[in-house]
Image (cartoon, rainbow over all chains, first blue to last red):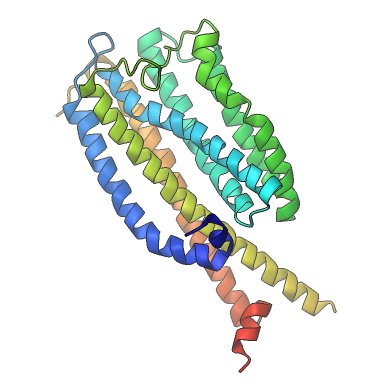
Amino acid sequence: MRLSELANPSRFNALAERVLPWLVVATALAFALGLYQALFVAPDDYQQGATVKIMFIHVPSAWLGMLGWALMSIAALGTLVWRHPLADVAMKAAAPIGAAFTLICLVTGSLWGRPTWGTYWVWDARLTSVLILFLMYLGVIALWRTVEDPSRAARAAAILTLVGAVNLPIIKFSVDWWNTLHQPASVLRLGGSTIYPTILVPLLIMAVAFTLLFVTLHLSAMRNELLRRRVRTLRLMRAAAANP
Amino acid sequence: MIDLGAHAGFIVAAYALAFAVVACLITWIVADHRAQLRILDDLERAGVKRRSAAREEVP
């Protein structure tokens, strides 16, 4: 199926109806396996002890917080350049989900930092740039709620999203560009991962589980947004019929 | 039982927080879906239909 064929909301809804039950099952299975591996199989870290278990939710949340904004940026291009009818729906639906994962990343990172670094928070480049990402998510959500006409809101949100995309490489490379308390990249890095396989494998399974969860929630939220727009159209038609 | 060591409180709080946020997200999306379907149903029962739907009913 080509991307252009999904421009028809009815076709997208039909596809979502077919795919969502499978995604829910796959997400549940991935989480069952990932949590079992993370909590019962993965060994404690030789320095951090059991607190390394926080990594299994912190790191996937951080990846998905960034993935959410990257997805919104592609959808923003789809809105402004290709004017794909579902692009702004995808952009709007991704914002609260990305914000939720970024919030999980910030709070679990803080709870991990206290026993590891001796502090809940420090204004270093990585932590601050992720906090900015979270605030940008809140800004985009507020923008969508402020402008009533979806097409006008979409253009404004798309521009804000593309401007905010500058923050993504800053988050990724902040640990290389500045001297930070946060550790440098240890999974996605040139030269391979520095994490031992007994901890890396559960982490990757949890990352797959979180990604499946993100996709499931995003498709569901897109379906809701299409319904909301249909409701809006019908209400406008009713208002027009009442005041000819 | 898993031995979470001296910092068990931080680990349990992190997992509980993540679970709570995801649970809120799922609840919100499911509730929103039901609410939109209910409003749509009310509007259609009141006779408000999309032009395409109205055309489909014309023989």
